Length: 308
Image (cartoon, rainbow, N blue to C red):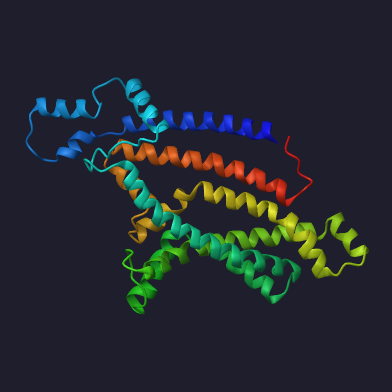
């Protein structure tokens, strides 16, 4: 186990290095100059522009800029925003991360709490009315794009009914619609996957053996089937957690939430090197740790899996 973890961590370091190089290179290929965006339409001399570029290290060769940036990242120094002068990148990410983490944590808990029991019951009661309802709802939920669902919820609950705010986080009410949009997509995916996985395991040899020993169907499902059926669910949950930013960029943009997704989009548009590079690097670390945690959970759920 220790050798396996060490190997996966070594692979993760390589992945993080490649992501950092790719991100750093692409940011410098984007048209636009952060110094020009910082100065706006103000009248400055070329000497002043050169001084600003020298202050931020933008006058040095790109490989030197990368080594300096990477060395600072390894020490936990994310630097300062180029656009928002004087504001530490760490502060910007911390403030935005609280919103994104809260949003996704609530959505994940609600999705898992509803989807797993619903998927199990639909599989056990196959071809029942409940099963058909789950399948139809799951198909619709997966097919509907997040931005359209978000806009329709704003029209219904904010414009027509006036129950909830259409954007922002003035109070906890601001989380309701964004969480609902995320839950709809995740709930549909997890419920459908849990139903399919449970159906596959209901016909396995271990389930038939448990029935032959005299166990009731409920005990067979709870003790044996569900545990094995959870493996693909763990995979999807680990994947969704690892790529948490990609799932919230659209939602945070539609509802104007000050989360990581919104910060990332704004930083790309403003060519704010420091912020974009820090966010991508942190998310690549999250992906590596999420995949490693998923593999570890496999061994806990299914004792037949032995990691060597």
